[in-house]
Every structure is written in C-alpha cells, then in structure tokens.
Length: 401
Image (tube, rainbow, N blue to C red; front, side, top):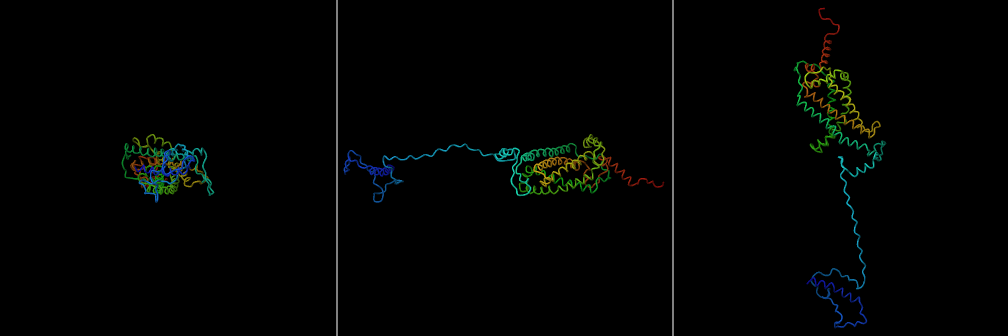
C-alpha cells in the first residue's frame, strides 16, 4: 500500500504541470464545478505535500522536485560512451640473471651491440674508463661463471679424489730399511725459509682465489652473508699484498735450485719405475728426482705467469692495457691458478702424510740417511765425496809416510 501511495504522489506534480502547459481549446467549454462527463477528471490521488497542505504521507518523500518536460517536447538523446577497444595483455619479462635466463633488457642490449660497445662520458683524462659494456665482456662472464667452475672443480676435486684413493690403496710409503739413526743435511736455513714463504703465500692466495669462484656456492650457505662478506673482504686484501712476497720467493727459488733441476736421461728411468710410488724399488736420482723437477718448473713458470697476469689486475690500465687485455689476464690468471693448486695438492700430500720422513727435509733440514739413500742415492754419494774431500784435503799424505 505504501508503494502505491508513493507512486501516486510522484505522478501528481506531473499531471498539474501538464494542465498548465496545454491552454484550453476555444471549442472546449469552461470548466465548472461539475465534472465534465466527456473528459476525465485530472486530479492527484493524494493531497499535495508541504507546509499547510496536509500531513506528510508515509513512505519515502520524492527524491527530486524537477519538473518533467512538457508533453510533446522532444528531448535530446544522451550520447553513449564508446566501448573501449580490448588490448591484449603484455607479459612481464622474466628477471635478469647470470644463469642464461632470457631477459628483455639483455636481449635488447645484444641486438644493439652486435660487435660494438656502449660508452659513457667521464671527466678524467683516461677515456678508456668510459667503456660501460663491450661484447667480450659476455665471453669473460661466461668463462668466470661456467667454464672456470668446471675447470676448477675437475682439477681440484679430481686430484683430491685421486690422492684419497691412492692413500687408501697404497697407504703411507715407508722406508724399506727403517731409520738409520744418522742424518744428512738436505736444505739449509735460507732454502727452507724461502720455501715456506712461497708455500704460505701460495696457500693463502689459493684459498682466497678459490673463494671468488666457489665461495658463494659452498661457503656462503654455511657461514652466512655477514661472515662471508668479512672473509671475502680480508681475503681480497691478503690476495693483493701477498702477491709481492710470492713473486720474490719465486725469484730466489729459481736462483737457488735451477742448477739441480735441469732435466736429464735419468728422469726417464724414474718415470718408468713410477718414482718408487708404485711397486717396489727406488730409481737412482740426484738432489731432485724427476717428480720434484716437474713440481719445480710448474711452480716457477706457472707462478711467473700467474704473478704477471695478477699484476695487470691489481694495476688496471697500466702500461697501455685495455679492458680486453685485463679480461685475458684474468682468464690466464684464474685457469693457471686452479691447475697449480691441483699440482701443489699432490706435492703437499707426498711431503706430509704420503711419505715417511719426507717432511723433515723442509722441517729441520736434516733427513735420515736411509731415506736419503732410497730416494736420492746419487746425491748422497756426491755429498759423501764432498765430506771426504773436506776431511782429507787433496794432495795430503797419510801420517807416518
């Protein structure tokens, strides 16, 4: 019922407005108090609302008092907004990564470069520092992230597996005749001090260098980001400064031992007999056997290349070098370093737990006489001859003559 009353209240103003808009026709009789039987009575169904016009009916009041347009008057159509054209969604590019995942910006750079480079502007005299991106950088990044990891993993990891298998199968190499109780001087103080300077520098250089390649994959998950950042920072400082004593030690090592490490025919026989590591018996050798000569030349020649290439990285753009030159220096430096680390692991194994009595040579400098005769018999004979000549000078006659 309330809805009906509300509808009639809304229609009443519209009917009154229609009566005022249409004037009475001349043929139509004037309205009287009596209703015209031929004309319907136009009257609201409810009294008008407002002050002094009757009580407020129930229900909600009309929401507007705007009059409707007169009857017969045309209204302008309301224009409708055009429907938006559907647009295909644009997929977001995948995130950038060094693990060969596609990236929109990286693909765009590859299309732009194609043998060229991107350069910026600098205010310093050296305009080479303005190089931002150059094509060879991708090849270097591929080497550092993928190739070097494979080379280092195979060389270092493979050598560790070989040494572990050799130790389990062969065990520690013992002296065949036991200790003689007499010793002979193997290396003097200068030789031992220089050896340990080179060895200590190389160990720290090797560990800090391996951290650059494998640290974020092996060490970072174990010690966490803060400790890893501290270890890497100090390792970088040590790596840069220990390059100088390492280089000095290589020069002294070359001067001290080069005359005893010249290859000869006896070295071939040493390799044929497995150096006494495989089977029984020990081949004849001088002060350094064939295996030690190999280690010596790997250390001197390989260390020299590693040192020179490392100095190019410590002092960038020195001597007219370019970014490409430094990338080549890094490739040489890192590849030779991991190969040297693998070779030195074998040297460390033999000089420590792999062979009985071997550590004394660089420890105290005095080795057991039986050990010296087994591994360096020719050198022992030379030292014995020198000792006899020192005791009995040449040309001296025995007493009583």
